[in-house]
Structures are given as structure tokens and as C-alpha cells.
Length: 202
Image (cartoon, rainbow, N blue to C red):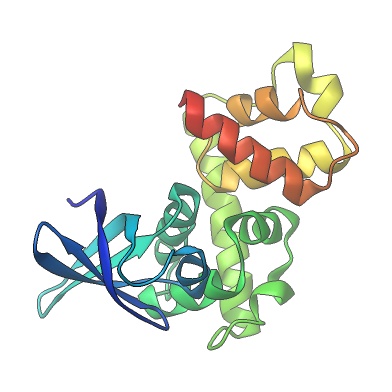
């Protein structure tokens, strides 16, 4: 499995990048969110990748942040959601907004992406929320640490924790970092800062 690629951008198009790594040009499909964050042709860039292997083809997808890659993996795990639909959603929504939409059950937000109807959006929200709940149950996680639960049981902090679990982080770890944040921050800011802190320690 190719975990990441670090090389020179030789070509950029909507949802597509050619990354030159040691003289080999890798064709990488990506989201418009990642495209907007790349420095431009001729510049160095790092992409976190996912390799699709099918009977008739191999397809490489890449993202500028691990959080976006985690969202992509979550999306393609949903029944009926393929690479094209996943990239469409991630082109319109940052990892923070996507995770918040799932955590809050806001399926309507996902329908703003091309090719995503209400039925598909509702399936994404329901399946991913169910997956998070099952993963936590399998890991024996039934709640937050008693020492921090009072700080994060309601409001923006609670929503931020739920969103971080959607992105694949353990609820206890998410609660730990969110509990130390300013409670007046927006949910998206909490998620963004949480992602930065969790990436450093996990």
C-alpha cells in the first residue's frame, strides 16, 4: 500500500494531479479542497494516498491532509458510495464540515455536492454514525472520562467530540483535547484545533 507521495507537481487540473516522485509521474485523483491547498506546478507537495485495486484497473487518490484521507475512507465504506461521489463531497466540504454534518445528522448539507441525492446523503449519515457507535462499543468505550465529562457533555464541545470520532479518533482522546479548549470557540474551530493536536500525539 502506498501511504503517501512526496514530489514535484508536474500538472494540475480539476480533481487531478501528476506528482513527480524520483522521475516517476504518479497520476493522482483528488478533491478540489486539496487542489486549492497545493502550491502550484513546479512546487514540492506531499499527498496522503489511497490505492484502489480492481480487476480492470488501479486508481490512486491523494489528499493534502490525513483528516481528508480519513473522510475519504469513511465515505467509500458506505454502501453505494464510490470514489467519484466521495471526491465530490470532499470537494465541497472540509473534513471539519463533513464530520460535523455526520455527527449532527445534517444530511441536507451533503446534497449540495454534485451527484449526491437525499437518499445517498441520509445513508452516509446513518451508516457512519452507526459505524462510529459500533467501533466504540467494540473498543469498550461507553462514555468520556469522569474527570472531563462535565466540561464536554453539552454544547459545541460535545458536537466537536462527536465529529472527531467520525474522523476515526477515539472518543476518550477527542474529549481530552476538546476539554482544554475555549468553550466559546465555534464547533469547526474546535474540530480544526483538535485535529492538529491529535495528529501530534497519536
